[in-house]
Length: 274
Image (cartoon, rainbow, N blue to C red; front, side):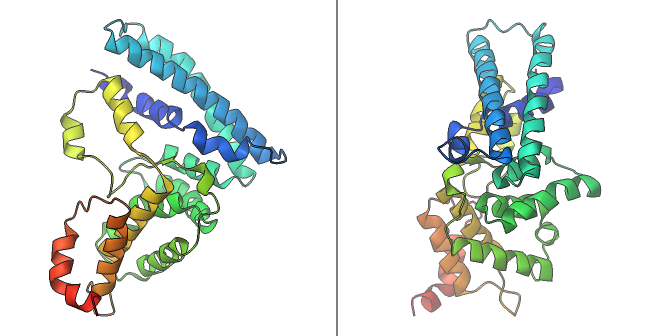
């Protein structure tokens, strides 16, 4: 029903669901800097987008949404979106790590070209280097080519996992910005096949996007699960260390979609208990 409008609506959802929490650190009593100022301007536009989308969902639910005029109405939304992304870009260029992550998320899509992937992965890695755990998790899903090729002993992948492990040993200096949106989540994502079959209504799209706003602890769970699923020892195999990572992910609420628990317990449970 909304297939032609889906790319735009998906972007609106991502932008509109950036909750006030995600901007809290920049609107407190901190000294106003250029990047914070642009980020605050982006916040106001995100709130405006959310109000617009919420109104459309209400009209759809009540059966009063005029599909004939919807494309025209979305032109106004597109203008606000463009201004939002411009402010976000200025905040990122000024060094705002969360803005950098959010821009990379907005630009990411399935089936990116090499150049498009570079435009997403370079800022994602930059945000990761600045300690943003959400970027560390996002990098795995969107940029880790070794994972996509199932080459888990690739030096780049091993280096990435070591960086992710180090991030988990420290508190994210940006933790006040959570919850943050993620494009993917092994631990907390719903059934993707069911989503594809689900009717494309604005309400359903909003619900799916809302479920991808993850707390700091949920990102930690995803990070531990990535380690549990893809870390290999020198022999190219998982071992009791993987079970330890898995238990840390499960303790934070991970749903274990790959059903690693039973296999790891049988294979390494006695080693882990020593």
